Image (cartoon, rainbow, N blue to C red):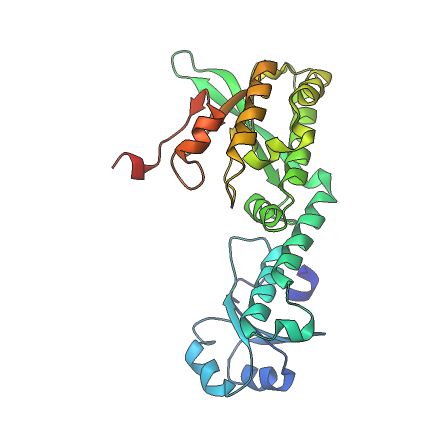
Length: 285
């Protein structure tokens, strides 16, 4: 989408309306704004100080429209797609133009673009250092997509919104194994982030996962699976069963931000982590 929208940081609001003439007339009253005509209607992009709610409401009358802020934390490639989807939904006429599921469609577009290009996912190994010796005793793997494609937060959000977290976690796990196996020497221990719900998938079955790790030159006992955030809690009974099976193969478990969000004590009990990083302030205050 970059070739359509550009990368101007001055534009922090997006308005969409089916009425292209109304949008064009509004643009004449918003200095520095620009109009983009799409098949579904027209966009107005401009600065929030000039493109105010009061101005637009005074000109709207009965014209349906959607007005949203652009998320500057997202890369250019998905910032405008996400904002457009939100604006169409906000207008209240998404069903009339066949875009009732636009937010999901936008997330799907982001994830499809990411999964189709494995090479844009960079795996970095951040050392875990023992303070008494200042030696690396293990590595935490960090996944960083190319900024031109998507942010990792945007990719995870898209996977959760479209119900494709397993697809994402499989790719990340495969890439971590590939990248780690090329290191010389191979690290004695690595931590890999996963969404808890993914562990219930057959791809993460304990014996099969252990076989994949050994084929890459890594022992299951050298790998810790680290729980990351998600939008809905997994089936804790099924998760606890899978965790027990993975533990028998040698895998370890870790939890970040214990007590925060979905890192509840029930989830911690199911994972029985060997490593618990900072506890949420709400449980210590």
